[in-house]
Length: 133
Image 1 (cartoon, one colour):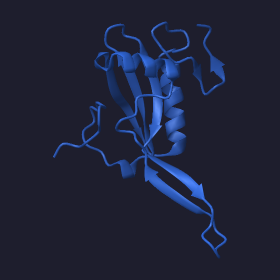
Image 2 (cartoon, rainbow, N blue to C red):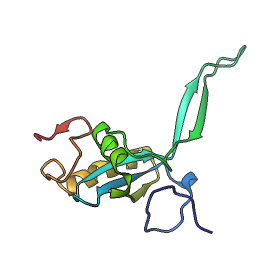
Image 3 (cartoon, helix red, strand yellow):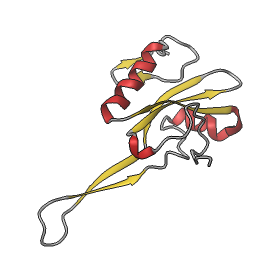
């Protein structure tokens, strides 16, 4: 049975989102070869006030909208909205923990020298390292 992963492409076959915290993705403009590398969590957790008469706060976990997610970067969102058929959405790595999602994103960004690459649409790494573009 084919797994529903939305508009994402993944070469590794079927996977169970409950076994992973999130994934690293690459969005590529097929016309210009410009790309963006980012991360997305499969689930989000929110903290709510305790129920009446209780002391412990409640943690609510629900599936994120990862199947339809397109990026959090505003410039890229505008480009995708203008012509969505020009973009490829690839999952490049599944990550089992919060730490591994952060580490893997940074690893991939440094591996491709994204701050020096004119085709890379990422403008910073972790909000600490910025491009001069």
